[in-house]
Image (cartoon, rainbow, N blue to C red; front, side, top):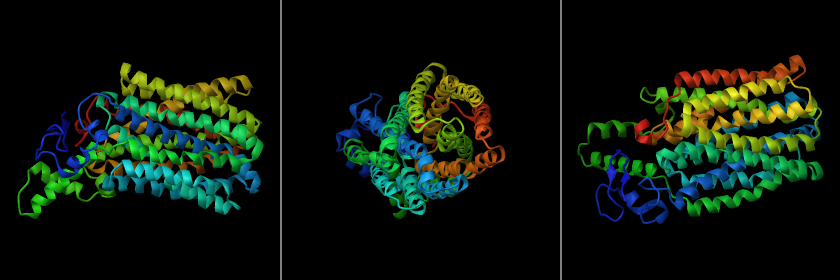
Length: 466
């Protein structure tokens, strides 16, 4: 079995005692699950374990986020809040969560992907009961802040582990399909809210997802470390030891080491990485602005302006998640047929058209029909979006760069953009105009993808950028 080293060259088989294999990789090659993903193009059971773990993580992400959105009318009522007060509380929590977006991937560049993903999932799962038991809105905001801080690492850690282990020809499809599990989590959140929150209150509903903490055990026991990360650590150690002995290294090694030895925010904006950073920032910021409006305000919009009951809008979310799952799976199939960029653009345009029709609809049947149709593109485009940020950066800073990009995007989409949404709602008395911003942003994103997003389908990570 051969593999690719951090230098981009073929490495010897695991059973060969070769100096080309670093000490850290020799240690990891003792484990069958690492050998299963360390080289070659065949898909193994370990690949499926990694994909399943990532999908389960996304599923919980969807379940957690959607449950809190669905119970927002109940939280506002119980704590006697105005809409701006609730918005401000959630913005504080989101602002704290931004630190987690950088902290977890930054740690992953130092200590690896697998263990931190398990710790991350266990933390945000165990924090759910704390939020559910909050006696005041202040305590609720503090609990949500810690939850967001823990939760936000999952955005990039799981996708990076898939990108760095699955064969290049399947990387996009697998990340897209595992990302679709978010939609199944949203569906489950709708079911939990409709069955539990409507009958037993929002606190009981929020506690239900805490059982997912067992997922951390699954991840830790079945998923190997990323071979890309392992080889990068060995390369860094080899160069460091050579320089310490007074030896010389190649020009490529010297340039690489100069960047790799100090991972931080500054590197993300160095000339060799800046083009990738700008593209990723554009996609991530547009994505969060688009989702932030729906994710935060749709249940309230359906409850207060369309007069849907908790049971009805919870049922809508069940089908919303199922349609999103179908959309992401369809995108995964389309990518192989027509290419990544075209699939990206088609989903954005489809979502923009039906979102516009949905906002202008008053008839209940049309609200359901157009609502479920815009789910296909609205959630479908997230597959290419998260894949792009997972693969476009070099291994030495893939975690930190993902953290920087999504932290900035979170601040723009989930902290700043809600001021726009609420200002429009307060000025017009309706969320309709705020929702009409979404198709405008989706069309702008489609144009940007056409002009600036490169086609990386089927390329090895080292071919994209080194």
